[in-house]
Image (tube, rainbow, N blue to C red; front, side, top):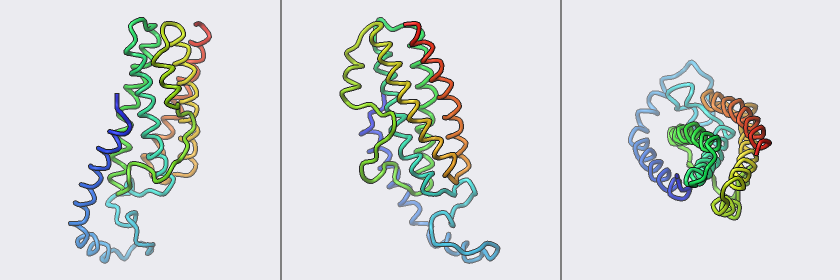
Length: 205
């Protein structure tokens, strides 16, 4: 399980190291930028200094990654809660494992993007995210057992996935970074498929 608070502290530390290294190369970046007469001048942002096209991003890309990271972290946490139960339905166990296998690497990928973009890994202020469970919701999941736990997990994860799909669709329409948009499209297709599977499974319990 990846505690959100610990994850964000580690990510902030990594970001500080990236910023420190970036400061050492400012002069070189400015020299190279001054030699580039082929492109139209824009505002002096990190985007114009990006070494590759995929390093370019906009505010939608940043918000997508900053919001999807804790969203994924919670999905992994919910899956871990279920996998700790001794009487778990094998189909639910397989689903929880699949969610962890898909989302844990995506958390790392989005964290790497944000540090590469010199953006914080956490948003400033309180931004509500669709589908997020409350502490009370997670406590109910922890205490539930047997079929009740399976039903609750599926119900919660369906809502969680639906929230992720909405966030990803916003990135597809408003994002700039090609890698981020590609991930958003993958999230939409894969989680919509899992939503259907979970609804079918819930109907059998």
